[in-house]
Length: 91
Image 1 (spheres, rainbow, N blue to C red):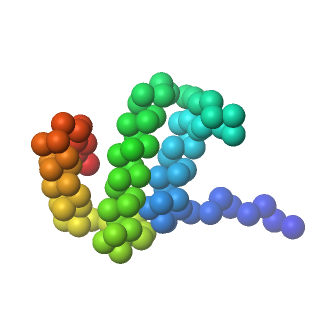
Image 2 (image 1 turned 135 degrees about the horizontal axis):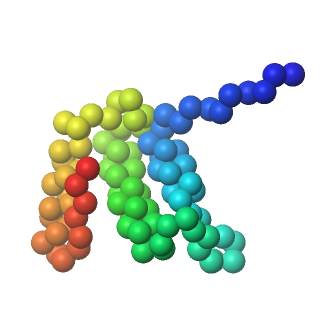
């Protein structure tokens, strides 16, 4: 029986989860296990989950279909939240 090569991650939601799991995780006991400070991980998590929801709402499922031109409306979402006092992240 051959060893299987790791599956390639193509879905945006899977890529977000893999990125976050690589840098830290919140365990079943609600404690953060980390490679980076929780504040940084939380910022990545919030920004990436927002990106994943945007992609889902615009039917962008796989990152090969993701193009900078398609992210322009996402960038404008960040600017509108900035007017409410939230931080904005540029991609």
